[in-house]
Length: 156
Image 1 (spheres, rainbow, N blue to C red):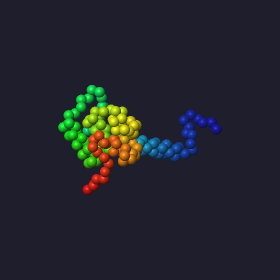
Image 2 (cartoon, rainbow, N blue to C red):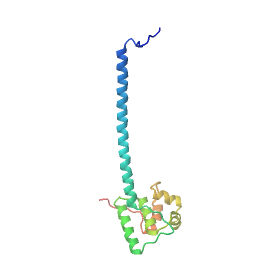
Image 3 (cartoon, rainbow, N blue to C red):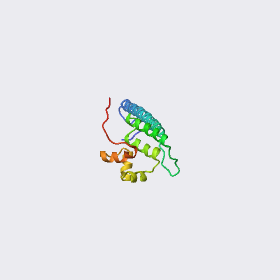
């Protein structure tokens, strides 16, 4: 069958047009939904980044270095008290508190601190990053230089 110039391919041109219109409408709706979902995800990511930045600024994540000046005894006690009370209040995890105590109070690198307390550097690193599930003995070892050990505390 030959097609003449300008001749419509379908016998039912109106139906074909409606189908195209419906398909375009669906695509438009999908696009809007996808845009909304992306906007929600972006907002959530921004919020998480803001929280992360605030936490990082709050915890003063610094590195232990050769040039860091040790704190005097009074400042050490004050810093220790602050970090420990924040950990007890639930503001800091056990690992975050350990890292802050190690760096801010003692000014030691992971390797040196691990050797001091008698655990491997990997164990110390995993403990500081809240990975792994360590026994009370290991937790006692890593917190021993600060006069802390595992115990039961009332939550009320």
